[in-house]
Amino acid sequence: MKILFYNVENLFDTLDDPYVNDNAFLPDSKLKWNERRYILKLQRLAKVIRAVEEPMPMAVGLAEVENRKVLQDLVTALNLTEKEVGIIHEESPDERGIDLGFLYRRDLIPRTEHETCSVVFENDPGDKTRDILHVISNLENGENIHFFINHWPSRKDGTKISMPKRIEASKTLKYHIEEVFKKEVDPKIVVMGDFNADPDSPPIRSILDKDRSKTGLIHNLSWDAYKNKQGSLNYRGKWLLFDQILVSPALLESREGCRVLPNSFRVFKKDWMLFYNQKYHDYRPNKTYGGSNYHGGFSDHLPVCISMLL
Image 1 (cartoon, one colour):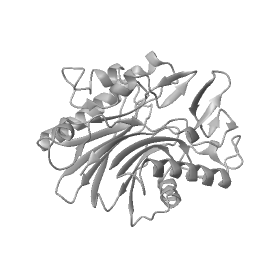
Image 2 (cartoon, one colour; image 1 turned 45 degrees about the vertical axis):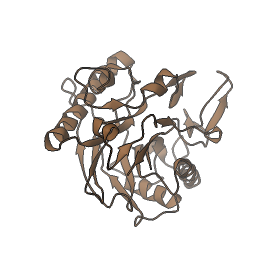
Image 3 (cartoon, rainbow, N blue to C red; image 1 turned 180 degrees about the vertical axis):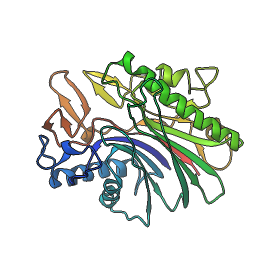
């Protein structure tokens, strides 16, 4: 079974929500976002998700979704129903109006609970970012899998300037992981997300990564792909691996129950998901928009996945 994370690049519907900053994604906006473009994007995202695993992976973490409706529409585009697929979504305080979402197969995960973990910047409490979404999945065999879905603060103001905000997000995540370790013996935890940082960035390596720090709690399965110069997005000709999956020791060391297959981390990339960039003479993710120019692609990120045995 596959576990998938995918930053789907501004998955907005075409309806004006007065409580969400969605003005850029309306039919009368500069982007001219309309029903035809929205449906095509849903179809393309569904094609990617189904290509990872039919009829869909066991669990799918999503970044940059506007609301629950777009998740419902994505399930429909997958030719599935909410009787087959569970949907978890909570509104986030993010200034861009984008949230995190979680889809799961009900035949594999019959029961769930969830909470949001707020990230607060002590030096700039007025600045808002995405909450971390914590989903507790209860399996039929009595085991729990804790999923933490992340979308950490961007680097739009510069890498160094924005670094403290990602460190704050990392500390928030670590606190909630530690709480799980206090309540459960050898908990099974999957952390996934767009961290807006590579695996060797201090917020990940120093605070979370068990293999590369004395205080880390979890293993970063993305490290080998990063060392081999693989990436999930391309910026000015350089591949970056911002999208990663980390797991607790119990998911790697367990000989019974659910466990992750070693070395199963993959950046999922197919030729039909890419386009050729004339300026840099390379192939990169075929995105929906480049600035205000409509490309009609999938996303500016590639999804990442791991394989799990139940």
